[in-house]
Length: 115
Length: 113
Image (cartoon, rainbow over all chains, first blue to last red; front, side, top):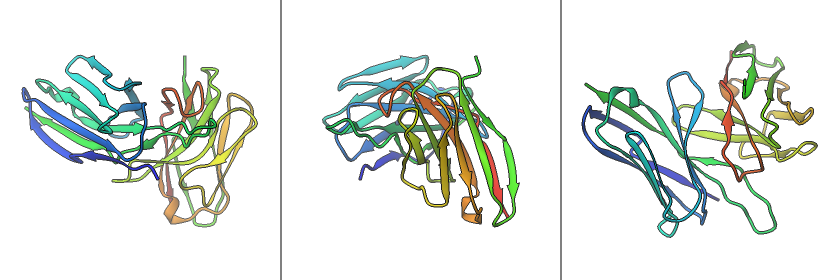
């Protein structure tokens, strides 16, 4: 059974600071996704990481994937209040023979950025 | 371009009542999914449809049924609602089964009393 663990689950930080959210998963996969969710809203796709060593950046957010370590990180640089949200990582696995089980999500990291 | 549209956005049911959640996508995607989101649990897959004409169970299928009406539409039915089904339900779609980026609808907030 695939397990996806995020940490921390809750993070309060000050504007201007840097921080990293970690996503570990239990089974070999080469595809990892990061989503953002604002309170009461849907999930918005942030990054799609498709191979070992993949790095994607968008503004103050940078995501990376290490498939050997089964680890992805979401790094926040010089945080601003607008980045306050819940961030989810999700992993999928394609089994040999073409079967799959869809995305398995972590429990989410609730991020609050204070002035 | 609407993307993934869910109806209704909010619903309150009494225990034992039935209802159907509707989902439609206009991106010509092959695969569609129903997830539920509960506090502190992330999202869990209820059912999925890898392609038109096929459906299969996800992690938490008990108490639900689905219909892939055509390529655009994928509905979720609660036959006899229970308080444990109080949740936020999200429909999603992707180009192909489990291998491409999934796009989510706005969600249905369901309360069963």
